[in-house]
Structure formats: structure tokens, C-alpha cells
Image 1: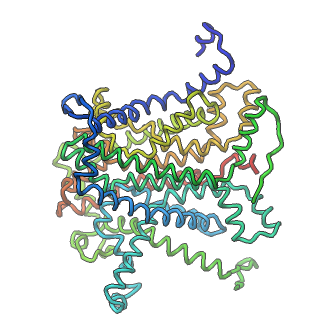
Image 2 (image 1 turned 45 degrees about the vertical axis):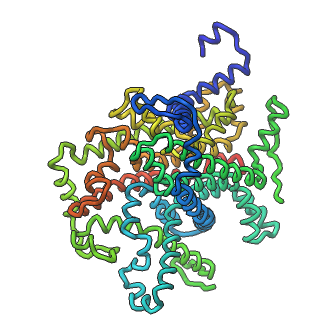
Length: 318
Length: 293
């Protein structure tokens, strides 16, 4: 950059943007090499007519892979449905439960650190091998056996009959799965909650707000950026989880059957679906998102570019 | 509401809502702690208890035989267990350090310096978030192969540095950093890099700590990259080793169930340790809140 300055004179604006580019350059390089090019290749694969496996040469243009997914393949749509249903049932539960837990943790509670660590541990075990192994052994369905029958004796349980037991076990199983998947969300909500200044609560309390009002009118608006982040994270995470049935399906085609083009086409269909879903979330959230103080300041700065020392902008609560 | 005389003349107030709070928390904790309890107790179970049905949560006769089994089961093969652990540690550490630096620099630039095309890049990041990595694995393999990185640490490290989620996370925090501080530093004559290192990075500590934990866990448990980028046994990492010990992808070999349980236990230990070390920082109140309030 210094040589550049000597050779040609850069304007202040040019120099600033150059600085920006220097900072972001490593990321751009990484993204280009390991994201944009692979994306391009997979797009090319999905519309390619013939693929030479050696050297990965793609030639010709066709849409037959996309048509095949919807018209010929009888397994694709049901698998797709299962994946979507699985995600849509678990994702609201995850968000609500993790928000509740985060709020509870943020209260004046003893051993808060311990609780936090425990809630986060399932995430540490990872969604990978370890978790899969535990689920294979039926841990999520065995909740009622926690104490090896000492807490609730087996005799009492059998008294209720099989149907009820099955329902109870399923509900508890879902609860456990959701709890295991909400480690990150709890953490993000917590860091959002802790960044809310206590003086806001104090002011609201002096004005006579109840706990309930405090939650809806102070907490929720203030953590709305985190809420958006969490919703996107949860959605994407559950759609791109290894245990997702559709991904297993795609993988079977891509790796086991070596039908690269078809696998790529399936991937793109799936991706388009997720994209639309997340776009909807963004559109809806943008409407309700509390415009944060930072953004207000940013807007003002755009108005008068010269730096001015301003008073803190007014916060409005509606 | 109940009042109990506590020591040193203090009163302990027990209200209904407090009791409820603790009860709810403890129930939730019970559910959440299940996998860990199960994991630990399984690692110490003797063979006959491993195959009990329905599975028992607590071990009756704890034994350390599983751990010696783990060493023995790999003793005859050319690659000892510590080698896998070494691979995992080296790879994960380098990835975490690099990704923290690269993501914070990128996020700083995108949010505060706003270079041309920054908005486009941010949209690209959002798109990247949604894209399932498995779909692009085959083309990624081509890139790695083209760079001649197959069977090297580079193949496992480089693709995992510029991750969209990481920069997204840091960016969320970066937006809350006040511009006034940056302007003040610029007026005082600080260079952009100095501002970044001495002002932005320390303030971002909670965010980078969070990122460290995320990135560590993800890459430590990453099963897919070593599976396709690496063919040599000596370069494989723990998640793959776990499967090798278990007897391949098809099914778990019965004889080594104990060794697998022990290996699983050993594999999860570092992630738990790093979280316990970092969790104070992760939760630390952001420095900016002092300015904000």
C-alpha cells in the first residue's frame, strides 16, 4: 500500500476502501477457493449432460436431473417432506425453550455458571459421531430409566398401559432432543441478554412496568438481532445436520452411487428451498426488528459525514 | 413466602417463584446432562454391562479395562492412538487461531471500513450460511486435489478457515462497537491495523471466545473433511479413528464396544475442558456496554 501511495496519489476515499479490502482479503481468498468455485462447479454439474469422472470435465447442458428429481424419483419428495417436517416441528420449540432457559439463567440464580456449562455440554459432544452413537443406543427414549427404575418404579409405569407410556416417552424424547440441540442458542441469547444495560430495566421499573411487560417491551426488542441470528442458525443447522434424512439421501447419490450430477441437482433444489425460507424469515424479522441504537447512529452519520460529537440518541419504547 | 434465619443474622427469603425457578432448572438440567452422564458411565462399564437391555445409566462395577483395551486394540496396527489425537490437536488449534483472526479482520472491514462490494460480500456470506457443505464436497475435493494438498494437514486446515458462520457471528458483535471510539483513535493518529489490534480485538474478546469454542467443537468433531481429503491412516483424526476402532461404518464390532466407549470419552474430554476454561470469557459482559448504558 505504501508503494501505491508513492506512485499515484489516492484520494482519501480510495485509500479507505483499499484499507478495507486489505483487511477482508484473507477471507475473500478463502471463500473464493473453497466456496465460490465449488458452488460454481456443483451448479455446472447439476446442469451438465455428461461428466467425465477423470479430470471432472463437464460438457453439455440439460435440465434432466431436475426433472428427474420431481418426476422420476419416487423417493425424493417423501424424504424431502420428512426433512422439512422434522425441522419445522423442532425449530420453534428450540427457539422458545432456549429463550426461556436463557432468561431464567440471566436472573439472580445461584450456581449460574454450573447451569450454563451443563446446558452447553450437549453441543460440545457434537452432532457428529458421538451423538449418533448415543442416539443409536436409544438414550433419548430411555429418559424414564434415568434412575434405573429407582425414581419411578417400573411397576408404576406399566400400570399406565403401553399407549400412554409410548406417548410420554415420545414427548420426553423430543424434549431431550430439542434441549440437546439448543446449547448454542442459549449461549447466544445469554450474551444478548447480558449486553442489555440494567439501567433500561431500572427506568422501566420506575415507570411501573411489570415483569411481563419488562420481558416483552425491553428484553425482546433489545435481543431481536440475536433472535434473528438464532432463528437463522437453528433453521440452517437443522437443515444441514448430518442426521437429516435428505442429506443422507443426497450423499448416497453423490458418493456411493457416484451420480455426481444428480446429487448436485438435488443439492440445489434443497438449497433453493432453504434460501426461500430464510429470506422469508429475514423479511418478517426486518419488519419487527427493533432498530438498534447503533443503526440510528449510523444513519445520522450518513447524513452529516463530518464527525460530530452528539448526545446519545433517544431510545424509544413503544 | 418463607423466611429462614441464615448464618450471620442474614435472612434467607424463599419465595414461591424462586422455588419454582430452581425446580424447573433442575429438571431441565437432568434432561440435558443425560448424554454426559451416560457417556462417562459407559466408558467405565465392564463388557457385560455394556450390552444390558434396557441400557442402564449408571455403572455397577466400574473398571478401567476399556482404556487398556483401547491401547491394546491399536497396539498391533501401525498407527497408535496418540497419533490420531496429535493430528486432531494440531489441525484444530491452527484452524481456530486462523479463523478467529481472519473472521475478525473481515468483519471489522465489512462493518467499519465498508470497502466497495462489502454489501455484496455480506449477502454472499448469508447465502453461504444456507448452503449445505455436503453438496459442495466433491468440487471442494477437486480444488484441494488441484492444489496438491491431498493427504496433508493443509487439506484439513485451509478449507475450514474462511467459514461464513464465523464472520457472521463476529459481525453481529462488531456492529455494536461504537464508531466514536474509532474516530477518536483516528484523530489521535492511530493506524488502521493498530486500531484493530489494540482497540477492537480486546473489546471483542467475548465474541472471539465464543467463536473459539464454536470453531474448536466443530472442527474437533468434523468427520467429513478427513474422510474425503485424507487417505493415509497416519493423517486421520479422532472422529475417523473412533470408527476404525469400532470396526468400520457398517456396524460396531462387539468385541471393541468397550474400547469405543473409552475413546469416545477421551475424545469429548478436550471440548469440555476448553469450554470450561473459556466460558467465563464467553459470558463476560461486553466492554461496550459501559459506553452504551
